[in-house]
Amino acid sequence: MPEKNQERLATELGATVSLLMRHLRAASPHGELTPTQRAVIGRIDTDGEATIAALARAELVRPQSMRLTVGALEERGVLARSPHPTDGRQVVFSLTGEGRRMLAVVRQEKQNWLAEAIADRLTPEEQQTLESATALIRRLMPE
Image (cartoon, rainbow, N blue to C red; front, side, top):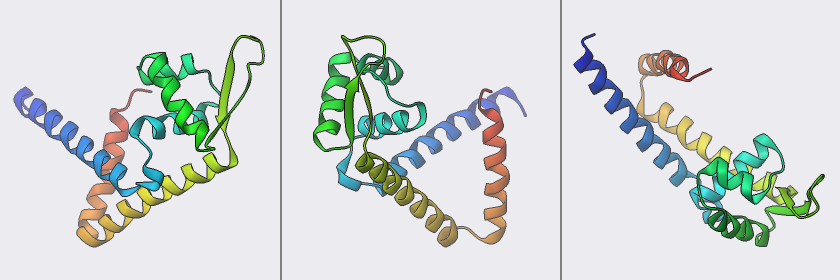
């Protein structure tokens, strides 16, 4: 494939993935979480408890902004604070039972929307092509 076509394909793929992500976020308006709030609860679910500073670094935002995000999630009962295990000056945040429940609902809503869109809008042959394309996209990810 000529380099020009690869650049065009890269541009189209990036734009399409971005649009798909926006649709997935819109499909799970559960509790009207912001994208940053969703990212924070997803990160804590994956990586475990974290400080505000660690979350801010991971999400590429200022600690002051992350403090507001975490505060809103704590107020809603999604996150709970506890003393840092080795540094008494800090606190760490973890998901509460409500936070885990909310995250599961959000993920299920996204999955349901995408599964329904695939079933309703794609032929069986197109679904097979999408399965192959998904494997190729996964190969693009760094290891």
